[in-house]
Image 1 (tube, rainbow, N blue to C red):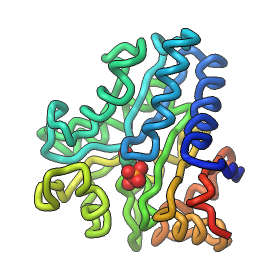
Image 2 (image 1 turned 90 degrees about the horizontal axis):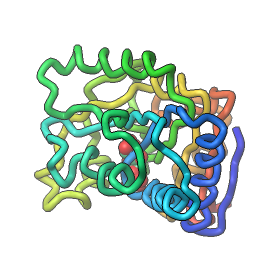
Image 3 (image 1 turned 90 degrees about the vertical axis):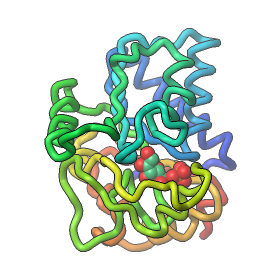
Length: 241
Ligand code: F6R
């Protein structure tokens, strides 16, 4: 595991985007795994800037997002598809057909989850996976639990996650209680993993992750410590020592 402590959110975002830029230049048909939420927004802004100012080319890349709420279609302003279109895809030269976000309206959800993993494999696997972290240690919607799903699955959201995510909805009642989410195995299959965490409400979970030399399904993020190419980028607020 490699730890990078950035001064602030701006520096964190620039550092993450620089790593992704380098990888895209190295492999123009790269497969990126992407996250939504507030954490990666600055990283995406930097990637848009690289595209506009330096002509960074996304025309051959493919992306797979981690998750989507069950029941929301891509036009819903709180859907992750909408978020990705707004914050990245519509502002770079990616082909929309190369952007995969789970379909919250899929009819046969169980089968759909299997298909999602299959599409990732058919694309050659994820080269670089970008992740945020929940204040309870979740990654994607792999919530703390006795056991974790290996492949893409239908997740039940924990109360803390529903509360955390209600800021993206008009009221807490509107937050869906289930989501399609890549499993911990789908994530660990990525060749390179970059976890981003900023702000003081992530400090406790980051400290837990760094201090305990153990892995536990009750702290899903800890399983990433087993990955051979795992980089954590935090800002100073999320890194209280
Ligand atoms: C988003 C995702 C979530 C978030 C996490 C942190 O696709 O899978 O696990 O990464 O909830 O969210 P923010 O960045 O909003 O603090």
